[in-house]
Each structure stands twice: as structure tokens, then as C-alpha cells.
Length: 259
Image: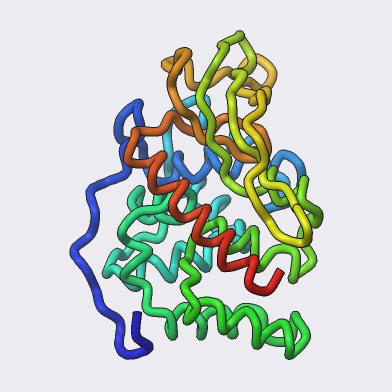
């Protein structure tokens, strides 16, 4: 990808998981709820996010809350602007950031690098800034995995391989369904000999309920789900599984160049 002017491509179809098309703001809220609940991202409004998810409705009130997610919003804006999409919470944009789709390939590396520089100027050491702004040219996409593997631990967010695995968007095949959780088989991110890699497949319990609120009732054994901080977010269609794995592996390999 060159460093010239932005190349706007025709937008990809609206995001649709295995359960069908989902409103972009609600899709974002599914992925953002648990880190907000844990106090890592956004203001203290996880009860409000949960209420919106329970009702399955979005409005300008939800948008105001989502605008407080200062970690993710700049990436959504970069993706939307690069693809001529007015709304950063368009479902296609939200899917691109959390899961991955072709919209990411329309983001010019120089534009991405400038936004990173604007965002972190004065917040990180010059050497760290040089490293970060060089990543788009090396292949970094405006994907959550890039933020987790290359940005977060350099800018004061949760550290360690356990945090890296919890914070990235994981995926796994459902082996068991219970009222409040799924058991899935997945491969965690681990640090081996100073490099990030995928560990051996292992079972993991992933929550799908908070109090009396339970989600993803349509999921059954054999389905693949995406999860964030061990919170079930979305049943994935096969193409989404492929995209999430592709971008996760790509951003992991890029991070290993300077880990």
C-alpha cells in the first residue's frame, strides 16, 4: 500500500454474523461491554450498555456513551473516513475494527500513521512514537489486534501475555452450552522465547450472562463465537472466522518484529 492519496473503495456489505445483521452501535457495545465493566475502557456506564443490549435498541444516547471509548474510536474514524462512510459506528466499520473485513485494506498507511502520531504525540517517548508510526507502513491495519499487540502495552494499558490474550478478540468452537456461559475450544496467545504465538488448543469458559441478562441464546454446540475479556460477543459466520484469524495472525507477526 503506497503513502499517496487515499483510495476509497466500494464499501463491503453490512456486517452480518451467524445470527444475521446487527446494528453497528449495538455490535460495538457487545465487544465494548466487558472491558468497560472491568474499568479498562470508557466511562462508568456498563449498566447502561447492558440495558441497551438487553433492549436491542440504539439511539443518540448510546452513541454519546460509545464516543467515550477513546481507545477504539480513532480507529473507527480512520476506517470510516478512508472508505467514504459518514458514520464511524456503521456496522461495516465496527466489524472491520473488531473482526476484520476489506474496509481495512482501503486505509492508506500514511494516513494511519499521521493519526497515530496525532493521537500519541506527547504521550510516549520519541523512540516509541517512531516505532508506532512506522507500523502502518510495515503492514499494520486499523484492527483491534494491532492496538492490543503493538499499541496497548506501549501506552500504559494492561500488560503481560495473559492481558494480551484477554484483550484481543478471541474465537472458539462451542463445546457446551449452559445458562450463563459457553465452553469453547480456543488457542490462547502466549509468550514463548520472547515472541508472541498461539498456544495449544484448550477449553475456556466464556460468559454470556450478567445477572438476569443472558445473550446469544441462538448459539449451539459446534458454532464459533467471538469473545472479548471472556465475554461472548457474537456468533461468527465462516467468513468472519477467517477474517478474524487472518488479521490476528498478521498483527501478531508484525508485533513480533519489535516485541
